Length: 177
Image: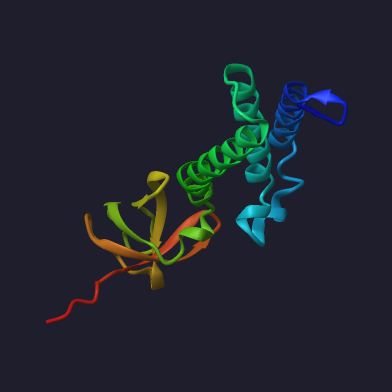
């Protein structure tokens, strides 16, 4: 069978090569097209490009290896591409999008966190606290809120950060009786 005056095998191969190159360009410039797929997952360029690539690849392979009817091969290629796209979207792309968590933090973003005193905080002086975050365990200089003294191994609530010093208050978690 011929399409546009070319054998169908050549059409599948040309579409496969063009879709592969477009996918490569999308990998490099995906930030430009980032918002396109927000309205519907079917409009996501990664899904559309993978659908075209899968369809062309399966069609090309079936045209070379079987003597089936060209329309049957196209239908099979589309069905296989839909299944592979579904698997790609739900098992690769969706988990990757939800896993985008930044490990960066600022001292101000730690306000409201609970830490533990590792160097006692004296009245009108400095001690040290540790805070457990997704970034690991952070050790920071601390001073008591209203210049209060806080003993070793006490839980503290970070009230604010002033010039790199964490202002903390002794923390008593609310517990039901």
